[in-house]
Amino acid sequence: MSTILTIPKLEMSMTEGTLASWEVADGATVKEGDVIYILETDKTAREIEAPASGTLVQKAAADETYECGTEIGEIV
Image (tube, rainbow, N blue to C red; front, side, top):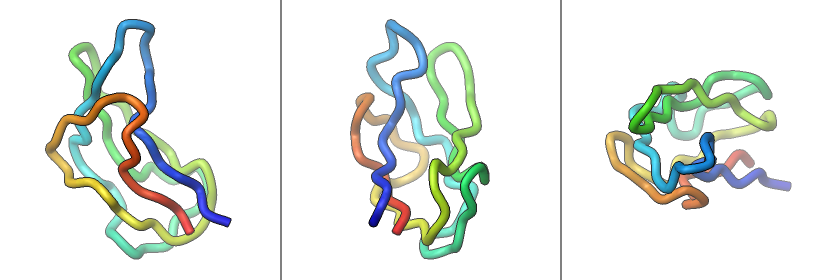
């Protein structure tokens, strides 16, 4: 079973976020709790951790802005 990764809504007024960088390479193995990407908002930058263990499949480019809820990857 896979886990879909989306841009989280970190603040009530947040509508989009910038995927500043992937901290784990596409196709790499991750463990639950590993930092997998950096998300920037207009107020802060935050490390986002893997919600599950498995292989990371990136589906979005770094240094791009996406609406909250947009699928950016998955852990399979």
